[in-house]
Length: 342
Image 1 (cartoon, rainbow, N blue to C red):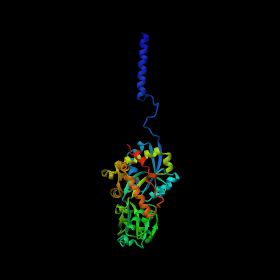
Image 2 (image 1 turned 180 degrees about the vertical axis):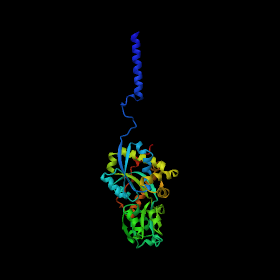
Image 3 (image 1 turned 120 degrees about the vertical axis):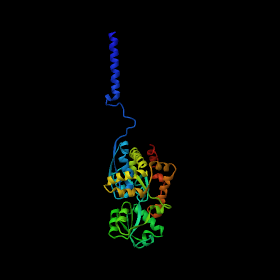
């Protein structure tokens, strides 16, 4: 009888110990949870404008990168080609580019892993003495080569029967364009937001001669997220996780009721006035949700955008007809679909 009581007591104690272990008494798990991911730290190249940062900063603020086990460091650059050079050097892993730098993706230097938005932030701007695009003939015009600045300038000139040979084209970076316009060193310029807003605000008589939407029937100005082909080959899972965070953030930041909050986040990130950033949010682009991007891939709309962009590049001479290639060669459409399954 005593033996039975002893065995029963030992059994009860064993059951209690088991319950305690299940409630955290044993801090050494037998196996990793199925949904854990390997933590990773990446550096992301961006430009100092709302278009480059709206989804990135939102993903940081909303905790979506944290959900994916990604720690994000950021590095500022002046333009897309410089970001691609940083990707190739290995100093950054992910980058944002505007329309013009996409030619380098077609040429194999980078691979697109996500469509960010359709831009309307580029403009051709002139002083009061120039009232039409035709007046640019023989004038000195500043632009940033290999970027969306060059794209809109070429489109604007072609729309009135002019070419780059009909103007005195001055190649310079974005900050130099602003300084030259404000000091009357240029007759006109082609530049993106917020530099365009600075010129329009601070130069007396400055006005837009053209913007992206003026050419919507023949062109599209795209902004994308990129990596190098070698990084994608070795780190595809990280790229999927990165883009999942971005797409989720786009679902939030693309809603008009969230513009003010997101503009505030971006303004804090850049340490600039929030009113100026909000102006960019309300006018610089067609901000797409992540779900819209995924749906656009499924129905072929997104692929069509990139096909049209290539046609524009060939027509403008920024790539050759021989360099033109299937969109799937440099846009990871399947990866975006995988990232969009959330």
